[in-house]
Amino acid sequence: MPAADRLRLIALDAEDLAVLSAHLQDAVVKTGDMTWLPGQKRFALVLNRFAWEAMERGFRRKKAYQRRRTGLHFDRVASVQSSGIDRAGKDNVLSLLAVQFHESESPAGEIKLVFSGGGTIRLTVECLEAQLSDLGPAWSADHAPRHSVG
Image 1 (cartoon, one colour):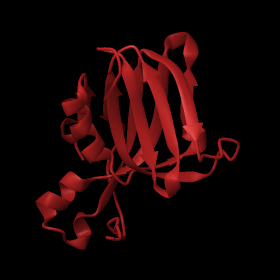
Image 2 (cartoon, one colour):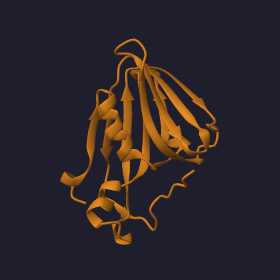
Image 3 (cartoon, one colour):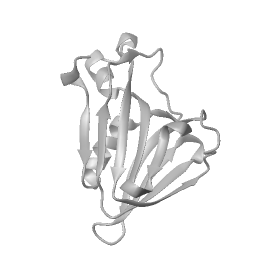
């Protein structure tokens, strides 16, 4: 993937974050690849995201299944809380389902990272500032993520 094709997104409101969340659906992340930098008011993580946009171009052909190493960070983070996640196991793999924003007192609010199996990370933020950047070339994935209905 040429550098010009790498995805770079910024989210400054809930609508922007919904787009970012759609691109991150089914990304996998090791707990050791997430960190909070309180001195910088930043929460950062590196994920392997499933490239849903490549499937759209490939009309759902197996050869179009791709993953990309992606950096994601949130700025102006005042606090971080997790629930249902074993942070001690640095190699534990989590599958991200969605990233949500709930405004409290404008522009402050809470960003919630929702993982399969019920795990969540909640970021209390002064305002919504998020940035996603693909870090390198794509690689082939054997399978597309599947979700059960019901």
